[in-house]
Image 1 (cartoon, rainbow, N blue to C red):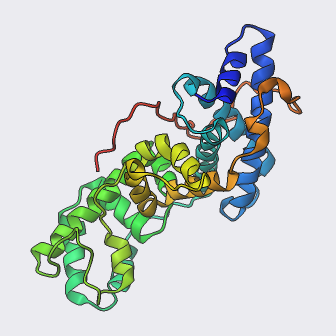
Image 2 (cartoon, one colour):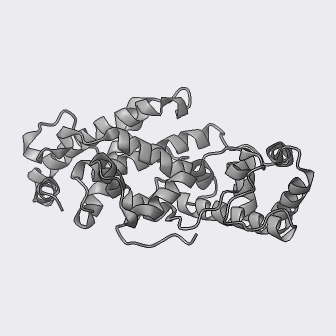
Image 3 (cartoon, one colour):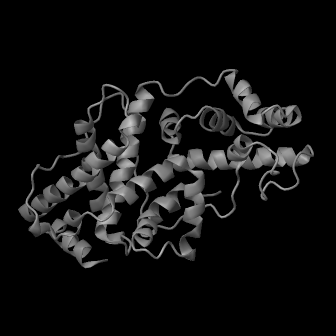
Length: 310
């Protein structure tokens, strides 16, 4: 734990008014980060949403997560570590808005048309993939394949629809890809599902069916993202110990979005400052405002290193 994190921990762990004042100052810092991230992702926010209110809600939820996890944090700078909770909460808020706005289309029969276009005229491959979707995938894997991989629905939105998590949806997506690659092998279209598709196949198929060994999964990537970004910002680049995170970021659009936001947040000097060096501009909120029909905000995992089953 760096010196700034220890200072924040001491202030937040104090009794009475001192802890409340420290929490208010920290929320103000998190609020600035949330505003910047929502501005960066403004094209994803549905029309009619109020970015200011979203930023307040995301900052309040991130503050609760930071305080809950403060004793088990990484060796990354406090600014990067704290900001990753903001990125996660902003993603959750945007997903909630998209979910309420009806961003999840019905799978229907359109998925076969999309799959045919992706197969780019390779009728034999299309037939194998269609049989694989219908016969080899579980119901959840089939839904994930049709809506996320073919329909372009964000993982976080689908997770809300089924009261699931980003990690669970990603696991289903990974397994669906693996099973469909196995189907292509069994039908004689491809030699090895782990070596990449033949070079003469369209890139759309490669993107659809990419299965990369050594994927850390969403949970581990979230836990290590601050260390990963800190290494990049330090100029040395992530080490071998973070190679699985690099693989995952190349495969998971949702985690990659959070990573890009954290990278953009950089190292804000105000977050590195000690609590007493910064005067609050907004008061602390008791928690995020949530509509009665809005799914509860996700709880982010602790620092336990539990690898996703990919």
